[in-house]
Length: 263
Image (tube, rainbow, N blue to C red; front, side):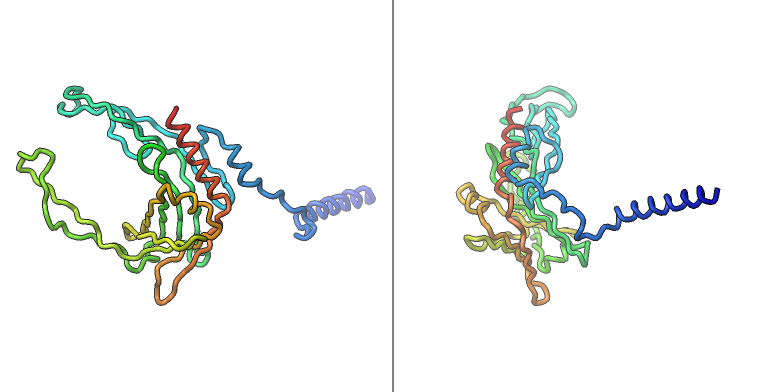
C-alpha cells in the first residue's frame, strides 16, 4: 500500500513538473511564432463586401457595413435617395428631385499611436475618400488637443448674406473661416507637407489635407513617413510611422469603394 501511494504521489509530481515545464520554457527554447503574411497576400485575400479589420503591413484597413437610407439627403457614405421639395412635413407632396448618388465609402485606412507613458495622448492618422466619382484621397489626423498649443480660433460673423429666396427678408450670417493655428508637418521622401489643424475641442483636434490625384502616387510611394507635431515648450516631437503596406491598403480601400458603388 505504501508503494502504491508513493508511486501515485511521484506520478503527480512528474506530471506537475511536465506541465510547469511547458509553461516555463525559456524564451530562447520556444519556437518562434510564424511571420505575418506579406501585405500583398493580405490585400489580395480581401474580397468585395468585406466587413471587419485587417492589418496590411503597418496600416489597418477597417471596413463597415453600408446602410442604404432612402428619402434622405445624403452625407458621406450614404446614397442620395429621392428628395421632396415644397411639401408639408410628413407628407409626400411637392416637387420630386432625383439626385445623383454619392459613391459609398465603406473603408478607411488608419494607424493608431499612443504614448506609452501617457495613454491619454494619441495620434491617429487616417486615409479616407471624399467627394463624387472615385473620390479624392484625404489624410485626416485625429490627435489629443494638448498636443496642439495654438488651436484654430473661430471668428465672429461679420456680415450677412441673403437666404435662398432673394425676396425673403430672412437673412443668415455668413460664418467666416476660422483663424488657423498650428500645422503638422509630414516629412516624405520627396519633401515636407504641411497639414493644418482645422478644428479642436477640449479632447481632440483634427488636421486634414486633401491629396490631389496628381500627387497621390508620389505621396503613397514614399519610403519616409515622419509626422512632426507642433513645437511645444521649445520641443518638437517627430513620429516615425511605417510606410509598409500603405499603398496596398489605400488601393484595397479604393477597390472596396468601387465594388460598393456598383452593388
